[in-house]
Length: 152
Length: 123
Image 1: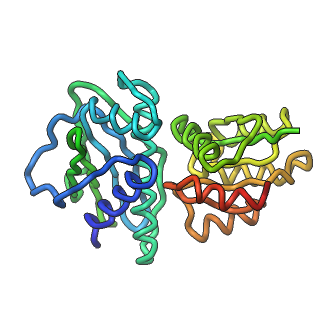
Image 2 (image 1 turned 90 degrees about the horizontal axis):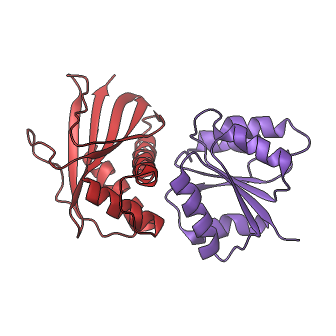
Image 3 (image 1 turned 180 degrees about the vertical axis):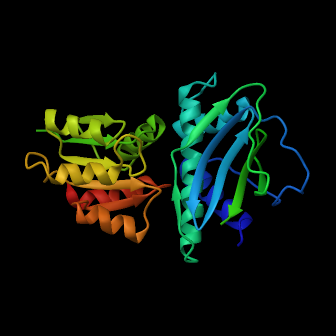
């Protein structure tokens, strides 16, 4: 199953259509590299022909820049609007991935997105899950879209 | 008399974006009402005169399909047209939504033009 291209295509579609920020990527992060400077994470579960967690990770500054672009307003703190916007972006990325897998007759259902923020947290996943991380570059910095998945 | 739209989505961000997209598409409503889930939407419809509903599907408490089914069983509100706006636009889900009376669907992410193309014929 091809995950990276679906993540990239779905993410680019959303940023081009509803956020209007230019993004670029060089593809998957190398295995073993860690995510840096992430203190906002939006997550959504997927289940069906495989089980997965799609996450968007970024710094607080980038979260405010992305949410502000999406809402058309300047945001100065990581408030409910920022968390809601990031959760909705994760939801749409997951929806795009679901649709792309559906065209290969792979069926998935989406859960409800959740966003967490803080200065120090970790997100764990089943030890046997696989992991794909795509770093995306913006003029203002970087964000990451991660998919942890476990084949049934 | 002006028209009223009800936007149903658990995301406050998405409700704001849908409202902004309606304005950008040149669709003027005198009043824009909002609901965070299907149950609240039913309450709003029973208490207000609403011309059209734009509803998400994937919501907590009462999702968009449950909302459509409950609405279709209430004679007072069953004829108010509903357009689904959702990441969930697979054929199975849209067929189910249409079986409960949905008039169309817009896939997230969307553009104002896409909203206009779907809503225009119903207004």
